[in-house]
Amino acid sequence: MSYEKISTKVLSAIFATGVLSFCGVAGETAMNITFPILMKEFSVTTSTVQWVTTVYLLVVACVVPLSAYLKRSFKMKSIFLVANLLSVLGVLIDFIAPNFGFVVLGRLVQGMGVGFALPLMFNIILERVPSRKIGLMMGVGTLITAVAPAIGPTVGGLLTAYFGWRSIFLVQFPILLASLIAGLRSIEQKSEVKRESFDILSLFAIIFLFLGLILGLHGMADHAFLSFSVLGWLVLGILGLVLLVWRSMKLENPIINLAILKNGRLTGHIVAFFTLQLGSLGMSFILPNYVQLVNHSNTTLAALMILPGAIIGAGFAPFSGIILDKMGARKPILIGASLIVLAQLLFTLFGLSLSNTLILVFYMIFMTGLGVAFGNIMTNGQKQLPLDQRADANAIFNTLQQFAGAVGTTLASLIVALSQTNHKIDFAQATAQGSRNGFRVLLVLAVFQLIVLVSVVKKND
Image 1 (tube, rainbow, N blue to C red):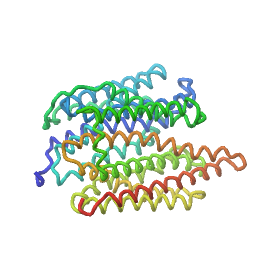
Image 2: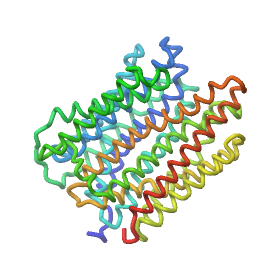
Image 3: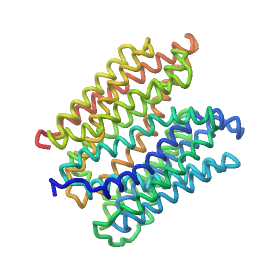
């Protein structure tokens, strides 16, 4: 099988599931640029409008951990059909939304669809793609999810400027329809399906875990740490984690098998993957704000400054998968992680006086490293397990990818906001200082990530 070609049906199935994920993630970041318009149209505050993003991240984070159970219990085509119809329904609700509550409801429904679709794409790759081509196709899958948040703000800004914010959802209809047709024609069932009992306590544990942690992190921006809005939610999240671990160890067939984390090399890959995604989302918050608030450029230019780096990073994703297939995992992963450390060092050294040109160049270095390492860390991490356990690893990787997005953005915004409260200097200078502090923290995380990867990625991988 290692020398087989990838069939047209498999490629079509990957396309169909990837498009669902792409629309959801791109729609999420596209909506971020519409916040001022939504606030004015629906008369809501800044803290309220954030629910458009928060509820989406929360639902995706809660649904993705169920993917291993769903794969074992239901046919892939059934999961895909539900995911597609939920995405279409969510887009429809947002397009016709008469008030802000319906906008949030639409994001919630589409988040459920994306939560089903995202791990399904990687499960199809791991199950249906010949072993010699897995690195390449995992890179393609990573490309789909990596390019979406990068082009979302640019596309969202242009659509909103010329056709209004609802057009962001209108353009998704034909794309989702094409995905539906392709998926129903191409997704085939190869693995055995055996309906398992569903542990409702594990579901509540997952909800408590991510509801508590995400809302607790978001609360840090406006509330004291010891308040219920922060500490109370965080405690709920920790209790959810304890309950989830307990149920995973107690049940014969848990919703998600956390026992696989006893594999130290897998756990190292997961830690590095989470750190990498956290840094990536932190940078995507700091840099556009730096361009606008420090360099006094407009919103469109801020979005366009990020786009070249994002395209380069996305382009390297499948290329790095080819390197992994031919040369092993160690070289592309460590080269990518080293480039990220270099970029963070440059951002830190020039943090107080970053011109738009320097931001463009340094971010291209960062995104090259991200493109080379990101998908390969996920691919090589799952190769540490037998095939029947990879769905659980896939669920963990994709869940932490979503959670890292919330943590990275919140962490970066808090660091920058702390410096912006310094009224002894002007706001632009305070923002530059806060950004440099953010770069310092992300540099430490990047070095930590490189050390972890050196210890867990072996020459024979």
